[in-house]
Length: 214
Image 1 (cartoon, rainbow, N blue to C red):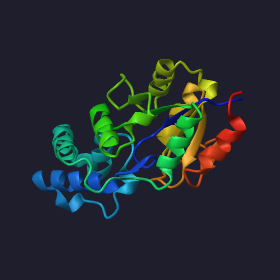
Image 2: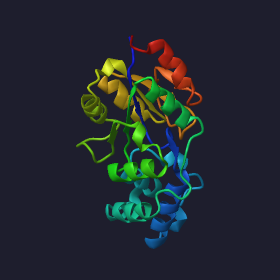
Image 3: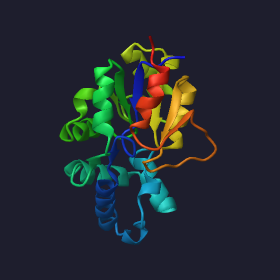
Image 4: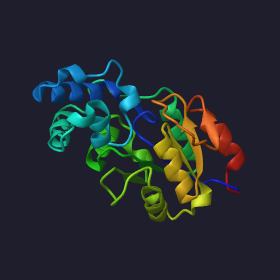
């Protein structure tokens, strides 16, 4: 077994975007008159895209039209508080130096993902960026991972996906990749077990040292 490509989730893995998502949610709930549904901590609700977020927060009060309203507010201010996690830039730089192919596979809109990565100054590390609307299906479906690997020209068994939710682990397993949990993120797992658990971004380098292709 060897690895020469890493696929990263975005929210809760590369970046801490919770406060900006919370800001957009607060504005959305205020406009639709459901401010009382605003959660004390938004982190457990993140992962799966906008629709999933609003469904988790609102339950049977959810309406499809709220999705576009949230997107409007989020697109207006995507990087107010959002930051790259400590250690991530250094890991990306080392992986790039080592000629490891890098990609992002997020459930966030592709346009939004690209804009956030651009504003945070890390977009050039990635050869391919997939959002929740890039392909017909999104995580936990394996399709985004499979298609991303096709773009990279990498076989699934030679790739590892790093993410902080069960959707990432399921997507990677379904595609046939190695999986790693980013424990510093908004971790939400049920029964799925990743191949590796990373306590900090630098742990990925140690794992890859033992899995690097010759």
